[in-house]
Image 1: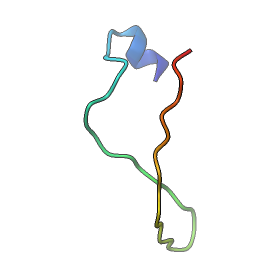
Image 2: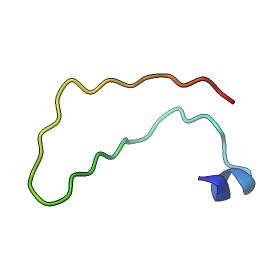
Image 3: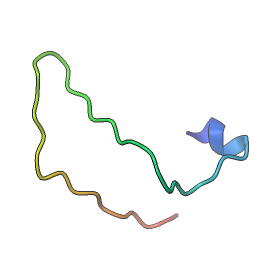
Image 4: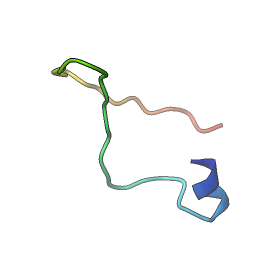
Length: 40
């Protein structure tokens, strides 16, 4: 991510996908919540 920011990419995203990864066996996710983080 730092390489993209150094190249001038936008800091805030307004669209896109969030990838969740599980190794090995298949996994179902439910009740996933996104939490806003404070900017440093």
